[in-house]
Length: 299
Image 1 (cartoon, rainbow, N blue to C red):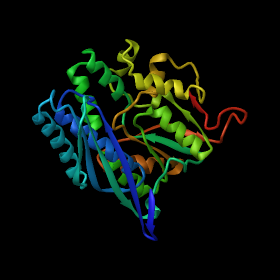
Image 2: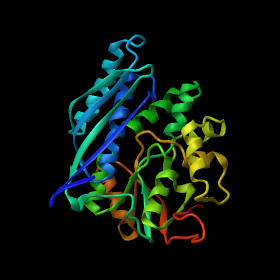
Image 3: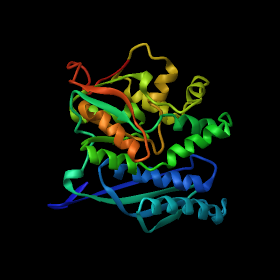
Image 4: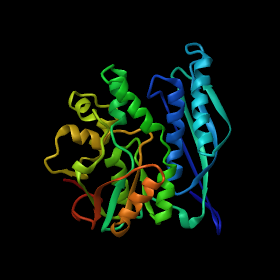
């Protein structure tokens, strides 16, 4: 985020990754939505983007790459973001992504370090896309479940960002590779607060708990849980739900910390924008002063 004048801030972000689904067009769409997510999380509107491509030119036909790019460009067009070009390299493993530039008036900028005690936590997308993607690679996820995950991942966070701007929310993070607990811990540590999560209120894609119980846990999810365990107290929470709360998401939702008096107004604004949200917990005063800051209690 860079202030370029009294009335303008630019936001720049970059994101790319290997395929998370089989269909190249869907992979392109998911990648674009994911790359735009950070811009929306910082209160900005996407303006321009550059494509990043790594492609095994001798192993996968270029017509497959064409479908990937088509999917990415379609989502960027839907977001009103102009793709100016990009860069490609020969790579043994396919990779695709975008560097995105957005703009925002300084008063609209949101950060993950502005949460305050007494605020309500609202999440805009269900968890579980990482677990479903891993299960799909192993052939243990149904076509219906995979399609549900794809629909969630290609959904832009634009409407959620518009709703937050309307209500005046200032504390926002997107929930992506570090999982809900990882990104929430960044918010609590950056804001010098703690959080309580009501596990039963966290939205989860249908069928994910069964997959987690059967062991379909991504490597990134395992690393996420290990990274936050010193910060989190699980009060009788079963293992499958712990994995889901740490699940590495691709193009996940936005997590808001909003004044409790405004939480219903934010939920209505999300519905007005064609989305939804769930109250999943609250921000509380910083706890455990003799241990790590930013502790999280899962109830």
